[in-house]
Amino acid sequence: MDRRVLCPVVGGDPPVLEAEAFRIVEEVGDAFFLDFLARCQKTARVVLVLRVRVQRETLEAVRDRLDTDVLKFTSQMVH
Image (cartoon, rainbow, N blue to C red; front, side, top):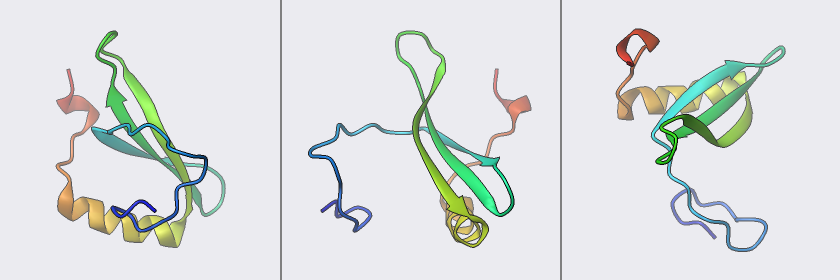
């Protein structure tokens, strides 16, 4: 059991990967992808750490929480 999110972890002992940023990608209808991203140390490129498919209602709750806890950057702010 992962105590940080209170959900069972399936598939043994997965490696812990930390994300530095996230993005929201609209899929189809009321479905969205919530992507968690990190910068690769070797290539300095951004890589996808985790992708979660969520419905609009779930995304709104997650987004409200992230808006209060995470500093926002626009693409113009990134060099």
